[in-house]
Length: 472
Image 1 (cartoon, rainbow, N blue to C red):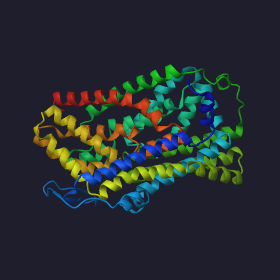
Image 2 (tube, one colour):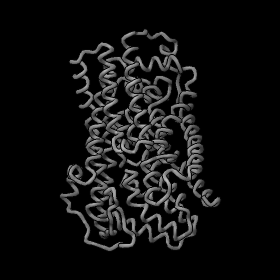
Image 3 (cartoon, one colour):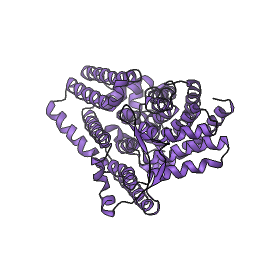
Image 4 (cartoon, rainbow, N blue to C red):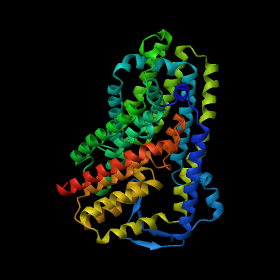
């Protein structure tokens, strides 16, 4: 049975447990060491590259691949978690770090002001009797956010709320993470209208944006059914009675808290609507994380001031929250350094070139699954879906053509390979942040989620083979 005292603690605010932090740091450091060893044994290599009209660098397959001098000095590898801040793409890393600090500050203030407990009390009072129905709705909501507008990092501020809600409803923290971030990752990979994976990839392949939707909709439905069954099974095994005080409706209604809660919901809801609209307004797509951070900050500050917290106390608790969450910064920088090391040593293209050559003698079914596998492997090093599209689609497209595989199916394989592993790879910043702020250790999360990943791998491989069989 879950440790109830731990669940209560999580409902009170954001704290990074020492056990979770040490384990995550240890795993990432071992991966850094392994990456450095790879730079010693894999020769450097580069594909020729061209720049498209939007300024994105992409592989030019006609220019070919050639070996170059590789490797990285030991001192550079040692300092890579700091050097990554000056490398290409550092703007995204800095945005993630700021995003993290905002989350930490706001949630600590919400907990200290009693807003979190009050919010949970109202939700449990309303839905405590139908908690599994609420679970199904929440999983669908987060999957839809990922699949329709490409939200992943943007749902992180809601993860601690869902984890605290799970505790109040008698489940554990792992179940709360699965209901939120795992669901968003699954939706992101199903990619019904994900602009960052399917949208970019179809554009690079010369296909109409979001065309061929029927197989992705079918994938969404099947993956949703699998995920809901998997999460419910865990919840059934670990459940305890719903928080008795909240379930009995004995918490005191507070008009000030009610007003603050309405403001919080309205502002955060506005942020979510803006993110949803980014699926149609492409100019917003590069700023969704910033929008969510700003709206979440505004929602937290406004609701707490309206509910009666002084500006002085708000600043004090906000600062304490930032300090509490700051250890996660080193985890994120260490994880980002793995890609930096491989890029500096020029071995990423070599690995990709070797993988593409391996597909030469495979049957059609083997090739589509191999494309899936390539994307899964590359996602370990490059978590950005759009960046991976510019890297991989120029290689996947001719490979699919050579074997007579429809490019639509190859893009589904790309989306599958890009999305699901985001919620198990320790190199993904979004996963590290979520586990840190919900005090779930990486080991605990891995022991739970690898079973789902395996089942989902079998399901999605079957979907790809089905698509191949029907000529999708």
